[in-house]
Image (cartoon, rainbow, N blue to C red):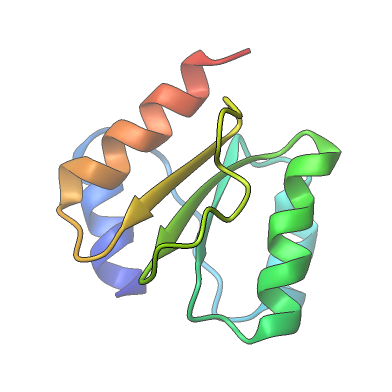
Length: 100
């Protein structure tokens, strides 16, 4: 799924850095315009990832259930329900980039 998302975003003109684990991603997060989180992450990683929004980092959350994951009315979190299409993620990233 990681390669598919990266391919879809690159196709839509969105630069991507991909990481296979949270430790490797930590350094890059500080320079990211947004972070894409999959709710299939281990619970501790998902909790840490969702906490990034409190630090001003915009999030796209890929969800398999009906939980809100903090999206609600926030303009810095976009929750997408699986299954997804490439344009779904690209559009979410574009929308988040436009939000202040």
